Length: 247
Image (cartoon, rainbow, N blue to C red; front, side, top):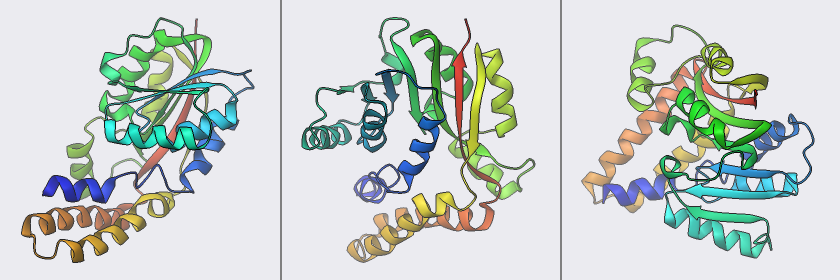
């Protein structure tokens, strides 16, 4: 039952928030103009940012993810919007990609690179990018150095590789890229995108699962995330890193 409540709580809560796409648009428009680019979206989920990329680029976008249920939902959206000729959906792990070298003008990662790690992702995905192509990564980061112990220990348990924006910037040239542009989200952005709607879902699910002690325990654990954010939001958030492959 805890798995069921967790799925209900988190299913598409971030990627389907309307304001979330504003940051996708901002990052995309920092790129130079590429005529009908071939784009790979790694960890596409149910595909809202992927669909946005197809519309913005007028190119071909391939979305990969291991979540078959999310991809089924994604496929229904693609058909509804008549984008089947420009979006390809593959049920595939980022650890099992076998695309030919230099297949993509742009690789896009919306909050998925943490699975492999920022540095390893840059290194391993580089071969798939065309000469002078781009990698766009949205990753969680420390926004300020020396975070308080409580939030530092929490994030080290969730994402051991989390580091500062400055540390990520230092890794870029070491991994074979030049830094093209970057920007952090506003301090309150994750409240609007994630934690406020998360709190609303928690409240509704407390009533639904009021007779299930296991589900209620899961909800209380998730509510702790909301409390930590409200207390420490100035210390952490996410940023886009737009890097260009160096030859």
